[in-house]
Image 1 (tube, rainbow, N blue to C red):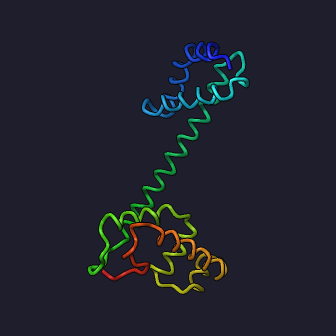
Image 2 (spheres, rainbow, N blue to C red):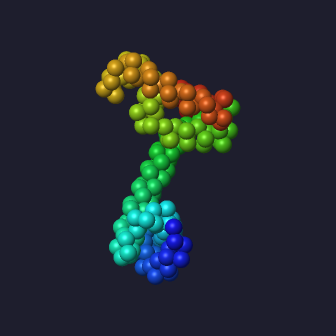
Image 3 (cartoon, rainbow, N blue to C red):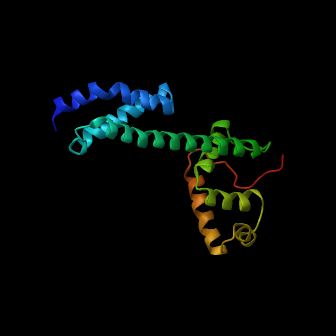
Length: 170
């Protein structure tokens, strides 16, 4: 690794890489994309061609795509949390604090959708294992495995000692 060559490359191209990233992800994330791009260049310096700018822009393009994927996942998680929060009516006799409820909802939202849906169909909607399996188009044994995974995630959460896995009527 030639640190002087890398530093010269950085000085020569940082503004153009940041400008490219800013056009695609905005100013706030542009510096993160540029930093990730030059980190990639540092780690793979032997692969960087003499004409580095097109290569750097190509790497920045990949980091822009990663950034957008992260935003979509975060938005999707926030949307799932909002939907779960809207549909979760706390029971009047529940001993669950707001923090415990929020953490439990976060655990639910972070679950794979298949496991979460299996749990909600059985524990929330009151379907039998066979009925829930029919709704999801799977075998009852597969549904029981999804339920086991979902319940294990819920029960391992520190916020859920008093959380019921069945819906109470408001």
